[in-house]
Length: 242
Image (tube, rainbow, N blue to C red; front, top):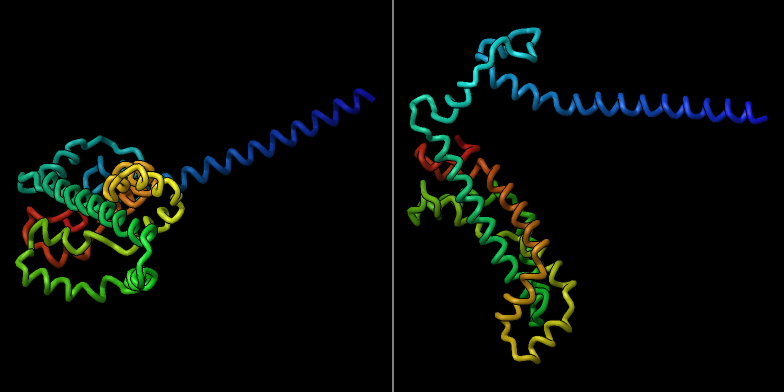
């Protein structure tokens, strides 16, 4: 009886081992499939241009052309414009992220914690702007930017995106969950509304603000359409436009 039980346990163990091997093999193949574009990008960056198009593709280059990276950084004319374009994208994305977080927090706090006539209507009107695609308003924005003389400048790249409806929505929904009793207690202790916002609301809203900042930064870093309209000089181009 013990012998049969041992054989049964061994059979179950072997079956479990085979299943684990199949699972690991599948996961390894899936990981290679997912990483293939990244591996191709890295190996292709170390080849001469002619070798990239050769078939079958050599996943390991014959020789490593590390100078390709230096050539990409310095540019064909040696002006290092690539570094300037990275700086442009970083400045635009950082400023837009900061202003979006600050203005969205202020607007969201007002809509969530202050009761006034038409509050819900104001919020619904803000949300309605999310249904308007950027392509529908980019020409009027471009005309306004041109009239103000903001073309080919940081102000022209940043100004149309200082605030967005999604940020107001995200911060308002977060502030709704904040207990009113804490705010009332602070008012009883003599704290001003600005002090309440700066010392109570903001420190307890870091996760929501960080989420909004990351999403906004990524959106602006990848933005191509607006810089394509307002930027003319090489020095003011952002990374996607470059």
